[in-house]
Amino acid sequence: MRQLLDGPARVLAVLLAGGILGALIGGVGGRVVMYLLIRLSPAADGVTSDDGFEMGRFTLSGSLNLVGVGMALGLVGAVLYLLVRWLLFGPWWFRVLSVTLASGVGVGNIIVHTDGVDFSLLQPALVSVLAFVAVPAAYGAALTVVAERRILAAWPVPPSTGAVASATLWVLRAVALAVGVLSLVDLVGKTAVVA
Image (cartoon, rainbow, N blue to C red):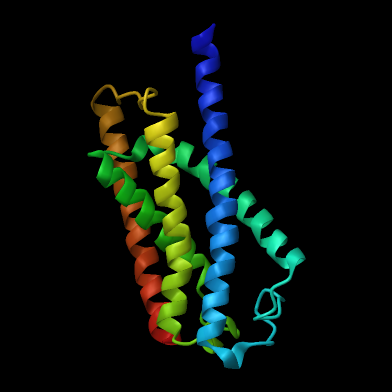
């Protein structure tokens, strides 16, 4: 009976860790990043951001909203992590690096945009881009470390059996790598435009 409860309990633990890390890194860490960026760009102080918030105004309700959004996105990140965990391979440090880069580039590419005021007023633009890549990258690294070292360490990914399963797994890894490279190229292009 313990084995039947072991899997769901581990999944719930990863989801809980993802939500907590999202609130801390995305919410609190995101708020700190916003504070530092507005100090670097005093001209943006008071301007309405692309998300409808007034830059440089830090309120309790706004901060709690950001923590809540960070927690929700952290839960989504934990679900995605559990879904793609079986694609990870190599030594532990390589798996952490892979998730860190995928999180930073993938989410950073969604956040960074060339139109609007956010990345045109927050200067230097390269610092702003790197900051909004660093937050999801830190989340990805933290979730992988917590999940693999504390929660899923005794719950290994089942090995793929057979030539077809192994070949399929490597094709999916190649597709994931190609998507990552395309996302990185897009992010670099956006950075060149705003910088």
